Amino acid sequence: MCRSVEQVKGQVPFKQPKTAKGRRSIALPSLTVEALRKHRAEQAQVRLLLGKDYQDQDLIFARHDGSVWLPDAFTASFRRMVSNANLGHIRFHDLRHSHATQLLIQGVHPKVVSERLGHSTIAITLDTYSHVLPGIQEEAAAKVDAALRLAVSSESEISN
Image 1 (cartoon, rainbow, N blue to C red):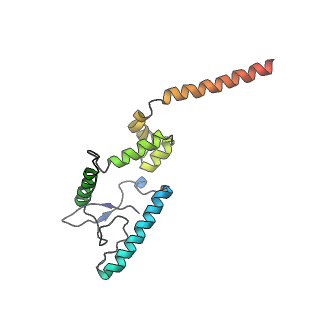
Image 2 (tube, rainbow, N blue to C red):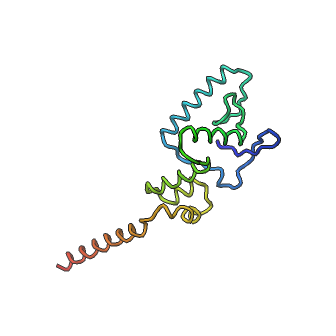
Image 3 (cartoon, helix red, strand yellow):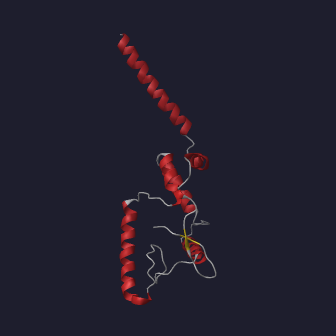
C-alpha cells in the first residue's frame, strides 16, 4: 500500500491521497513482484535481528529499522544514487513520466496508462504525453487504407 506523507517538525504523519483515484490497484510486472517479495523477505530478516528496536509500520519502503523515510532524506538518497550512476539530472517524479512514456511507446492503450497514473480523465494523459506518439496520424491513415483496400477488393470479387 502506498502512503502519502507530509513532514511536520521532524515527524511524518500519514495522510489520505488527494483524490479517490489516488488509491488504486495496478497490475505489476512479475519481475517487480519477485523483487518486492525478495525485499519483504529481507525486511523480515532485519525485523528478526532488531527485535523490539524494529519500528514495524508495514511499509514497503522504510528505513533499515522500519521507520519512515523523511521526504528530504529520501530525495537526497535518490539524488546520490542517480549521481553515482552518472544519469544526469533526474527527479524522482521523472520516473512517473518515464513510465507513462515507455508504456505509450510500447503501444499500451492511453486509457490504461491514464488509469495507472490516476489521471481523472484520459484527456489529461493524452494532452500530457501526445508528443511521444508522433506517428499516430500516419498509423491511423495506414489502418484506414488497409481497411478500404480490403473492402474494395472484397467488393470487386463479389461483382466478378
